[in-house]
Picture 1: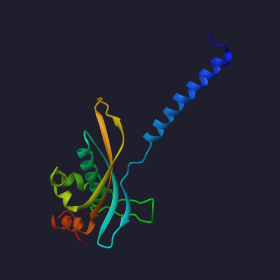
Picture 2 (picture 1 turned 45 degrees about the horizontal axis):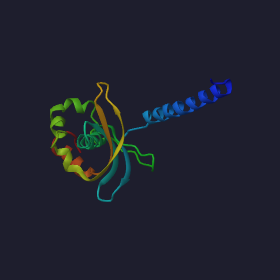
Picture 3 (picture 1 turned 90 degrees about the vertical axis):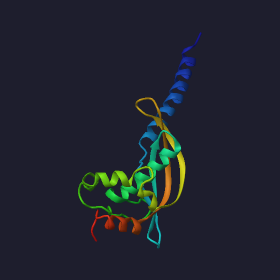
Picture 4 (picture 1 turned 180 degrees about the horizontal axis):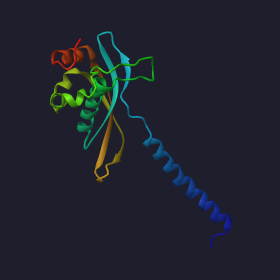
Length: 162
């Protein structure tokens, strides 16, 4: 039979075990998964970190590449590590929708976006389960983007104007 003192100790141990694991889960869920610039090369490259999810590692890495290039094109990228803010390459409002057919092809599995990625390393990131119960694999990918070539491509294809 448990005494009041033993019951209190058991309750506190249970509280700490379950309380700590819940807190760790909550902290991971608030992590910022925004694309970030971590370096600028003299040759017109930017080194960025982007995140992607998929049903397997290959799909998650491809999605992180697409997310990074898309952010460069449409959102611009900020950096917390040094004073750097980039404007979006495509500044036209709703350009992604206006040129939807073009960008669907550009970001296809073997699309042109791959031509602007140079060097890539990926790390598997803590994953969750999708709402439908299937696993969601996430990768954090660091890669170099040939910015001047990407801008030139957008000009050549009449997406932006110099």
